[in-house]
Amino acid sequence: MSCRYGVYAQGSVVLEYWWGDLDKSTIIKSEREQGKDPAIADQYLVLADCRHCQLNLTPEDVQDVSSALHTEGSSRATRIALVLGVDHEQNFSSLNQYSIESWSSGVEIMLFFSLESACMWLELDTQNVSVRLQDLQREVSKQL
Image (cartoon, rainbow, N blue to C red; front, side, top):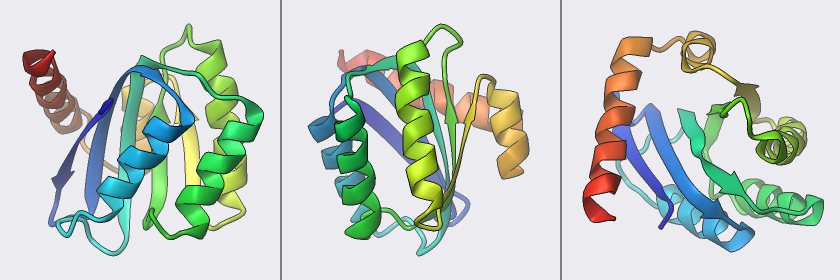
């Protein structure tokens, strides 16, 4: 699995740490499993740290991911902030397309190049989020 996540604030906040090469099936599988997590509230916010992953998605793959997550009800998220590495042009293109398609299904998704900006948009404490994302990254490093 290329995503480690943590559930916080009584299930109303999910922090995701993504790493490695990601394709359509990996993303859909991870999000579907997360969607079944009973610790996550019916409506929640997501901050996805995508700074350490590379998306290998065609425009058609992005449409498939969006369709799978939003029409099947796998995601109950209401606002999603995606934090990207500045040098990830391909990730920006794919995630921007995903953002556009998701807004039409009622999910607000914004792309950010800084953790601080993403936290501000979600009204989360940057220092707290940063520490928790580092914890998730350490968990991943121990398993690799």
